[in-house]
Each structure stands twice: as structure tokens, then as C-alpha cells.
Image 1: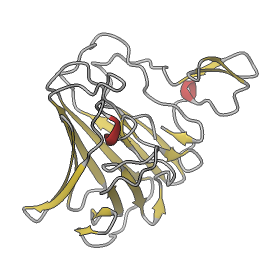
Image 2: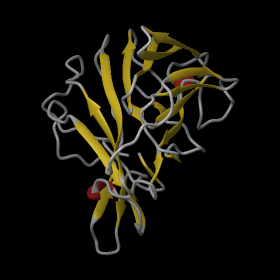
Image 3: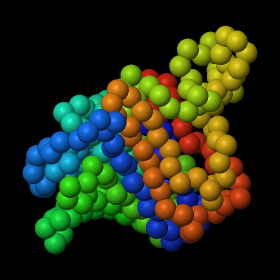
Length: 245
């Protein structure tokens, strides 16, 4: 999947994003809409072929955190990288200097909705599901911008072999060398590839995604009126190496 997606330089933003799994073949009913509290995860069955898990506790891994999307199963296929979480920045336990505690809770709302709430320092992140929709709605709100890397974004990580068809200019597979840090790469034919590539202004882009065999995964966002940089070109949209990010 293409790189997510929430980018914030302004304070007090509400950043809304949607992960949508779409079958490229006719869909059939899958499972019953429900929420399960397990030892390590909250598991949400959307009743539409999509079952996802949110990690409840910090397992002390540097690439996984409480609040991560730890599993993304669509029609029986696991799309989430099992070695790394899909997460805010590098994980909710590393958003603010000196703050590592993350609290995760979940509830069913009015029978047809499920809300998972992740609280970490001054940031709250929500995962929401609506009965019968193969989507994950997300919202991010913070009263103080994360200060470990001075930005806020949501990164989805799906193995590239499952979603091989994404943005060509951001596909760093088969590169021959890095020519700027680990961000710009050269191909054998002299072309370059970059996770910083984008042909869309921040205020214009509304979705990004990638496709695989009979499936597409898309990030769809609102207008993010609270964010800065509207007329400037968006960076960090996507990178495809081992994962579609």
C-alpha cells in the first residue's frame, strides 16, 4: 500500500484517514461484525471480509508498539507485515521525548460501530469500523506535536509481493545504490527513485494506493484543513521496497 498519510505541522489538528480494502472480484459475506478483547490485541471483524487487530501492550520491540495495526486480514489473506507494525510515526511509544506509556481501549458504539482509542502523551489516535464495510476509519488528534521527529504521519506496511503495483517513481526495488542517504536510489539505467517523490500538492491529493492479485488497498483522506503546506508538494507519500509503505 502506498505510504500513508497523516502529516501535521499545525497544532490542534484532527487528521482523518481511511484504509479501504477493495476486492477486484465480486465480494461475498465474511464473518460476523464483532469486537474481541484478546491477551495481546483488540480484534475487529467488520463483517465484510476485513479483520484487523490493534496491539494492546508494548512488547518491547523497536519496530512494534502498543497502538499499532498488527494484523490486516482481508478475505483470509494477511496483508500486514508481521515483523513491523503499521503505526503513527515509528510507534506510539516513541512520539514524545520521555513518554513511552500507551493506553489502548475499545468499545462497540450503537451496535453498528467499533471504536479503538489509542492514547499516547498529547496524541490520541482512533481506529473505527462500521458494520458491513471493509474499511478502517482513522482519526488523529494532538494538542502538542510529537517532538521525537517533529511531524505526525501514519505509515502502513504491507509486503510488496502482495501489493506489487503502486507508484513507479517511488518503487526502489532493483536499485543499484543509494545516492542520498537512504531516501534517493539509482537504477541501473540511470533513473532515480525516491520515497520523497510526489506529483501532488498537499491540498490536492485525496487518495493513494496499490493493487495486487484481485485486491486493492487505498488510503483516502479528508481535506486536512488544519495542516500547513497546502500549496506545496507533498513528500513521503510512498516507498516500495520489501514493503509497500
